[in-house]
Length: 103
Image 1 (tube, rainbow, N blue to C red):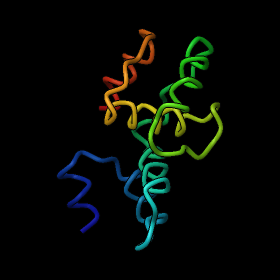
Image 2 (image 1 turned 45 degrees about the vertical axis):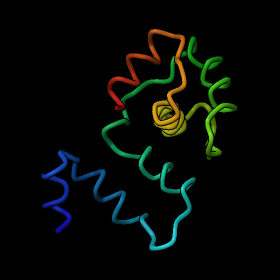
Image 3 (image 1 turned 45 degrees about the horizontal axis):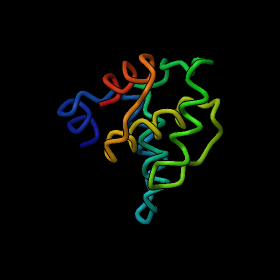
């Protein structure tokens, strides 16, 4: 069944493995966003020095608290996902290009 879901939504098998290991029946939204941000599709998105200030500003604006440090890719992905859902405006070109990839 997991293989069918992965192939239908073009999700890498490594990501499905992460979901399978960490998905629990009762998770809050903070943990679900964190789990999705751990997807292997996002593992090579870098955290650039010029983005850290804007990421820090966005972390205060997103509606759901973010687990993790600013130096983790999963934190950046989580912030970008919430920014997209909340329709927050991004300033930097680098963050905007990463947002296109994430969405």
